[in-house]
Image 1 (cartoon, rainbow, N blue to C red):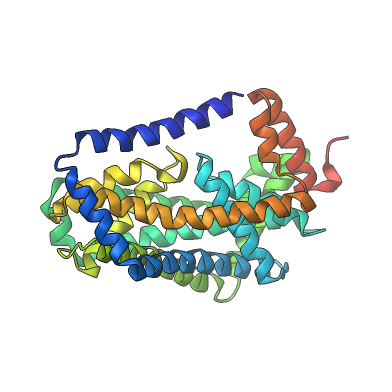
Image 2 (cartoon, rainbow, N blue to C red; image 1 turned 30 degrees about the vertical axis):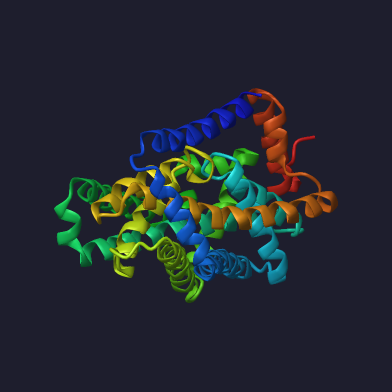
Length: 357
């Protein structure tokens, strides 16, 4: 119940932010011109929607590579369906890993003896995507350093991304330089004495397999870069449909990588509201009026939202055959009982030999 209330509050906050922007917006009559321009350029809207679909398709391919490396060669059609289901939950449920939990649950049901590894691939996929975004932002910011140092908003984004890159790199180096279950007594005792420790150990080993697999890290990072660029291409086509002519593709690449990173912060469902605020301020630097910037942000969100609806339709059919995921148990019960039940479900999925009686 508490989780339901929290989700509802976050959704209301996202909608309220957008409503506040529209209330404070000047020259609201130009919004009509922007909508009419976009409607008249519907082929560009279709091209943007296709770019967002390409983004999701590439993500599904990346996940398949990770599953294949663990010896779980599921058909691509099944993987793509599960990815769209996860996208549906990410669009409607606030939280960093809402859709990831659902994907992990279903892919675990597809395997008999590697459930923990199957769950691990979902979070490895998310981590690689984040690393690629940070790396791409770092490269673009380095190339256009004078531009990012010119404005207060872009300087903040520059320093934030630099700190995130250094922090992430340091954590990964410490955690994966040596096997923590072999070198650190605490983790060794945790693995030997608890079911949770054994599950964590299997997931940790799955990370090591992916890191040591020949060419896998390079392939998945490259796919992630193409994935992020595809989403920028989506924004570029939507901007062209809105007659935004003051920005080049390189401007979109520099700014929308930052916007997409901000939208990924789990404050509202699908980044609703936070994306619009970031778009308004960053595109304002380039001279784009808010009567064009806000519709652009909503069009990008709408293109992704459309494919999440497709994922929801797939979920209806899939859940009728495979059963509902534990996320629904979390939503239907109070916090304490939900945590207990979720732990039990995941222990059975990840390590059936050590499941609770």
